[in-house]
Length: 357
Image 1 (cartoon, rainbow, N blue to C red):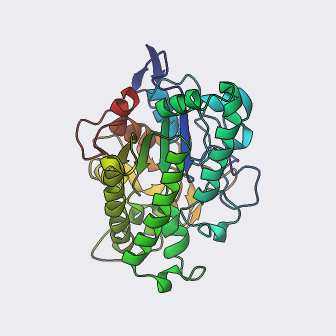
Image 2 (image 1 turned 60 degrees about the vertical axis):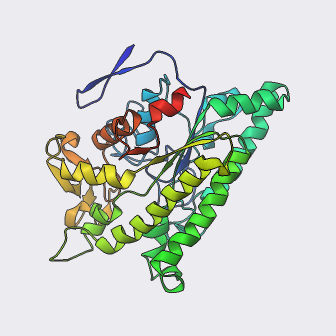
C-alpha cells in the first residue's frame, strides 16, 4: 500500500493497483481539470492562486489542490490523475479521460453567460469519439472493447449550472418564466436521462451519478442573499431538492432493469454537503461562509482573481472561492462517498463496492 499525505497531514492509504481499468468523468467546474484552458470563457482557472497546493501547480482545476474526482482516482488506486480530454489521445485514453467543463450543464445554453464551454451533450459526443478511437486498440473486437468498458467506472456530475447559470439568472435566461421549478426539474431530467442512456449505449455499465449539492449555501449566494429567517438561499435549495429526488428515482429505474446489466450509484451530494456544514468544526473547518480567495461580502461577490492573495491556511476553509470547495473539503467528501457504510451518501452501494463488481 502506498501512503498519500494530504497537505493537511491526514495520511491515507492507497492500493498499489487500480481497482478498475479506466475512469471516465463528465461534469462541470467541480471536476474540470483543464478542458476550459484554451477556450474563450470566464469559466477558467488556469492562473494562480488556483492550484496553489497542487503538485503540478496551475492546471485549470477550480480549487487550491485536488478535486473530488482526483481524490476518487487515488482511492481507486490510480497512480496518476485522470487527464483532461483536451490533451489526451491514443493509448492513454484507455486509462480514462476527464471530459468535464466549467460552466457546463445538462442544457446546451446553460453557462452561455460566461462564454464557451462543453455541454453534457457535447461531452457525451466526445466520449463517442473516444470509444471509436479505442476500437483500434482492441483490433476491432467489439466484444473485447465492451467487456473492457464494462469494468471501467464512469462519473457524471451535472445540474448545478442549470440552476446557477440558467434558471436563477433571469436577466440572461427565460427558463424561470418558461417553467415552474417542478417543470424545469422534469425537463432537465428528461434530457439527462437521454444523455446517461447514450453513455450506456456507448458501453458504460458502472456509473456514479451525483445529485446537486447545497448550492444555496455557497459564498456566491450568501453574498447576494439577505434573509433573517435562514442563512442560505432556500429558494435555490428547494429547487435543487426537487431535481435530486427525481434523479434518485431515475437511478432506481435504471437499476431495476431499464438499462440491463448496468449498475448506477446515486451520490447524494446534497446530504454530504449538508452534513459537512453541520459538522464543520469537528472536521477541522473554522470558516464555512467565505471563500479562501475572492472579493467582497463572504469573498463571494467576485470569485478569485489572477494573482490575488488567498487565505493562508486553506485547511481551515470549506470553500476555496465563491463556488468551489477546498481540497480539504474534497478529501472528506471523496472518502465519505468511497467507503460510506450508510445509504445516506451513496445508494444502493458505495463506490468501493461498485468498483469490485
